[in-house]
Length: 315
Image 1: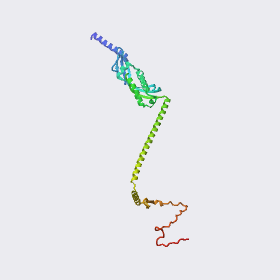
Image 2 (image 1 turned 135 degrees about the horizontal axis):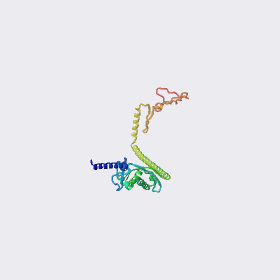
Image 3 (image 1 turned 45 degrees about the horizontal axis):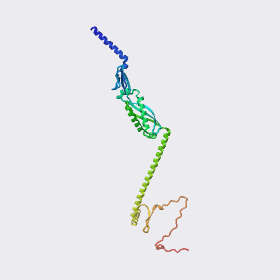
Image 4 (image 1 turned 135 degrees about the vertical axis):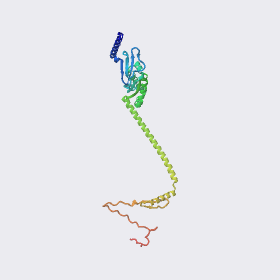
């Protein structure tokens, strides 16, 4: 081995020692670990922000004089308190929670145009502006009676369009609280109560009108029915129906007394067997006095029964 080879070996060993020392000294500035759900943007000392692909999670290598900016790409939330004026000038306090995340593909542009303070610079101001813009188009009663889901959707649409131009995606806007002045709330509630009372009276009026119409139709139908029945009835039909009823009752097992009427308009008189069932007298009560006997008459003009001797009247 010549002295040149020994010198080359010494140079290589020295370079390795210097490089190792350099790595040990600046390893935090060379190796960057990006945690899950985060992304990085490299700022080059000589060329500026690297516009293009962002640095993904894991181990990344950069030159010591460059700098790595790390952003949280996961879903984040921010509570925004808004003081707005309605269309008639009433003060409305609204608390909304904005769910957002940076657009990963636009992370270098977001860093160059806005920076790490993008929440205070874009998310909160544009959310406040969207809420105030929506509230200014409605009066207090509309805000009090509007559906919460519709309110959230309108605010989210306005905010999403503004933030999309600034490389931030809005996932949802949750309405936490909507507060109106107490006097306005009481006036709105009284108005709504009166509207409900008026609607109830209208419903009752419609029900009464429907009932009157029903009775009118029923009366008209009964009138036509009785007119048809009255035209169909005749003395012969009534006599025949009376005879049929008498025959059916005479065939019934129940005891009864049937008295056949006389004349063209007389119908049978039916006395049920239970008419003769009188209640038994209570103990100690006086016995009922039987009715006086009525002499039975025979023949059209009365008289004594055949074969008996007449009794002279007493004086």
